[in-house]
Every structure is written in structure tokens, then in C-alpha cells.
Length: 468
Length: 127
Image 1 (tube, rainbow over the protein chains, first blue to last red):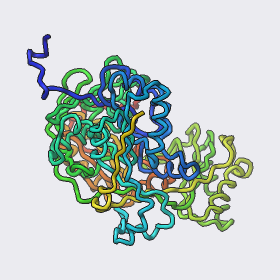
Image 2: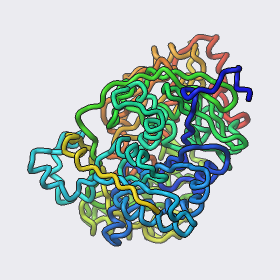
Image 3: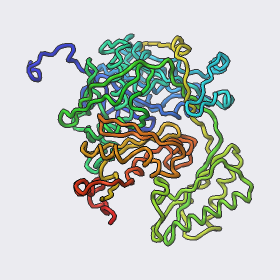
Image 4: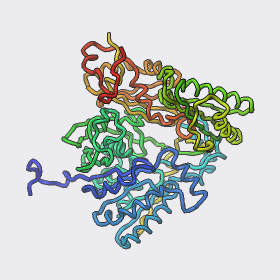
């Protein structure tokens, strides 16, 4: 057999292909199927969690104790379970949300129905949920101060809806080591879903920080799906081909930590310096100190080298030890909000919309309604760039008036929702777009990031591996 | 000296962390990266956004990517689920930064003219 450049294949030249299948709960439902069937992969990572997702899931679990996870994951597994068993593709996901155990149970059921009984194991990671321990932790001196304001969690304690620790790769690696084909976690970090397979496959030790940091960078590239392979790319976006069937990124990882970002042949999108750079700086803080539970990665050490069409080599990455803390994602109830809209047409569309907003404000004042915040935007003119858009021209064809209010008093927000439609008959002319009915009052569940001593969390982590 | 919008020199992506928007600004061509380093300072960016950013602006350099990362604190009306803004997650702060104008030499202005606009869509540079 001829190998590239006449080199003999050695174990160290082995690569592991880790495919990204979901970038958030609500992403392209068919992308994971295309990843599984479009070419060879070894792992499929599916990221379902964003900052506020856990609190939404908690709400669902309070209504139904068997809910509280990314439900999309179960019908997805019904479609690909057979492929995964046949091809030995392992699935690593944080779809478990606030209820990984029930999520795994539902997936096991799907596996049995797909004929995988006795042929697959499912790993479940638990222990990230601090909700039941919160009072004990606060009493023991863990103040869980807000990472930006410094306020102790006690100030909103009765309003807390969920509290979960961001976990790293260790429990996932443990589940893989025990033979899990599918690993379901709760609030694992997005990046761990990609680098846990690398740690497992290459046997990296937990103090090999440069290698772990390489894994984190690979994870950061994978975690937003097609955002690394042509989606939402601002550089010459019109030249990016075939986004209708965009290929999600695949990390082709080597034991030395270097890896290639690529995608399946025949898929849409592109992998270039530009698409990958845009993803690397996405949601970035201090690039020299990208903190994860397992390692602190230095994004200023990343080296990128194109290796032909849709192949970009990433290497040279350095890392350092993690901190003694883990990040906690707390969700708490923080009042109510509602947003109402109306559309005004030419002539003088913006002037009409602004006049309507003034009338509305005056009516709200007369009703004695107090809000923490009232925001008026003109969609079609200033809702994205604010004052940078300048003054709207009088011949603007149309504009959408968008008014939002926020406050602690549900009744006040409710009353606001009844003041939008009346403007149609009692305000400036040439107004439409109210057919959607009254705006909906939304309860605000806000995000409270905090740090906790890892020593009070890690001993309580649990990994179960069960036969389907 | 000609003034050109950053749109012609760089591409960008933005996102959020709580009430902070981040904007990564990436030079199309490495030769223009020093211009960005020199002129697109945290102070200039803070001034450009004005009342749209309540808190401080921080800048971090990634020479390896010919990119700079800005953190715009207090830019998202509380951020995430709290914010009333259409762009509650700062997704298009990137393009608001690309409006910013900087001074460049004639050679640069000629070389990058029209960059960043869909062919046939852009109105070109304002006179």
C-alpha cells in the first residue's frame, strides 16, 4: 500500500476525526445526519447549551419531571443510532441539560427500538447541578458573587431557578474509557465535547497543557457549527458556495496536538483562513487567557497554515494550568418585559413612528406606569447601529416602530401590551402590521455567572455507563 | 490624507458575554494590520460608539491572526434575556465598527477601494 510521501503509517500518524453537528439548541436538524453519512468520522459532538438554555430547561422540568433536556436530540438519535453502531461513531453531547439521566433513558429507548439492544453503551455525567446544595454552599461561605458586579448570590437567592457548574472533559473521558458509544452530559463546557475525545484517543495527561490547549482551540472552532465553515462569515460572503447544504466543521486531530479543520467533500460552505479566524475571535475575552476547567489556553499562540482546498492546519498552541475555580451558571427571575411593534409607511415614515412613540410614552406616564427601562427603536433605520445610522431621510419607504419595556411589576408590563394596538386608530396615519395581536409578557430569567472552589464540586461528579 | 471606512480594510464578527459585546476585527491583508493597531485604539472605538457603550472599551491584540479583539462593556442593555434591544446579543456590533473611518495613504485608499461591498450593491465611497 502506498502512503502519502512514501511515509509508513505509524501509530503517531493516526488522526481522529471529530465532527461538529450542532452549534446551539435550534441549529440545522439535518447537519448531524450529513456529518455521519457524508464521509468518515470517529466522533460527533453536539452542543445544545447557551447561557440561558439551562433556565429554560429548568422551567420545562418543573412542569414535567421527565423533561429538562434538549428534546431534539432524541429524534436525531432515532435517525442515526444505526449508523453510529455500524460505523463505531461515538456521540458526545451536552443535550442532557438539567436532566441528563432522563435524556439518556429516552435515547436508550430509541436505541433499543433501532435494534441496538446489547450493542451499545450510554454514559451519563451528573453532578453539575448545584440547585439542591445552594443553601448549604452559601452557609459554608461560598458567596457565589456575580463575576461582573461582585454582588453575593444571597441578594437574589429566592429568585434562583437553576445553578450548574461548567464541567470539563474528565467525566466524558471516563465515560468513553468505560466503553460508552454515546455520552450525555449536563452543563459541560462547549469545548470539552471536542477535546475529551482527543484526550481519550491519544492518552494525553492532565498536565500536558499545550496539548489540552490545542484541544480547547479545536473545541472553540467546532462549538458554533457552520460559523467556522462559511456561515455568518463577513468576508466576501457572496462568494461562499452552497450554504443551503453547508458542511459543518470537522477536526482531524493528531496526537501532537496539531489538527486540520476541514469538512466533508461535496458539502457546501468553505474552510479558509477567514472563516476560521472569524470563529476564533468569536465571543473572545482576553485571548492570552481562555480559561476552561482543564487548562488555560493562549489564543495568541495559534498558528494557521492552509493545506489546500477546505483544509487549514492549526498548530503551535500553548497552554497553562487551570484555575482553582469552576464557573457556575446561575439563572434567576429578574422581572418582566414585553416588546410591541407597528409598521409606518411613506411619506415621512420615521417622523410618524417617532410621533407615535411620543404619544405612547405620554399615555404610559398618565397611567402612572413605571418601568426600569423603555426602549424605542426604528427597525429599518436605527435598531442595529443606533445614532451611527444618522437621521432617517423623509423618503424612507417604511419603518417598524419597536417599543420595549422592562420592570419588576407584571401588571404594569401587561398594561403596556394593551397600549400598542390603540395607536392604529388614535395616532399618526399610514400604520399597519398589528395583526399579530397584543405583545406577550415575558418573565425575564437572567444569567448570573459566578465562580466556585472546584474542591466542593469535583468529588461529587458521577459517571454512569449503562447497556442499551 | 484620504479617510476610508474600516469595512475596506478588515472583516469582523461580534458576539456577547453578558452585558459585554465583543468585536473581533481582522485585517484582510497583513500589510494593513499595523494601520489598524495604530489607529483603531480602544479610545477611538469608545468615541465612535459614543452613547451606545455605557462602560469602558478594552482592546487585545492577536498579532498571530492580524486581528484585534474589543470588549465593549455595558453595551447590551443588560444583555441576554434582560435586554430589550433588537441586537441583544451584539451580533451586528461588528458592522457598526466597520463604519468607523481612519486615515490612510493614497496607495492604501486606491488598493482597497470598494472592498467589503457586494458587487453591484455598494454605492462606493462617499465623496
